[in-house]
Image: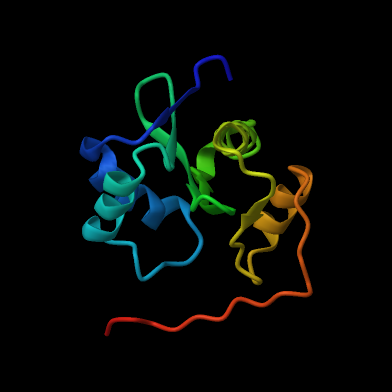
Length: 142
């Protein structure tokens, strides 16, 4: 894994990130469009963290959002051909280092209930489901 490079996304990366999520991420989000990802990177240029392979190919992502109070993790995704090589762990380590640097004290992750593979990865990284809470959502646009 010495050929792995972790870095923040740049505006020029965003189309590749959206295409990557269609291949590597489980499920879709209302924010999975160019405008949504641009807003993220404009607002917080370090939030979208990328794992790049030796040839400069995108092989993993995580969004490490910090609102000044809580640390939120989204879109941890690793290319299907590159899983179980420590890429997800490296992305989470970068996200957690960011959170600590910003004063965060606990990370939480959005994980689909049906995504059993992700459950194993998150548990291996030291995360556990918090059964006392449930996510409530309301779309704000059509």
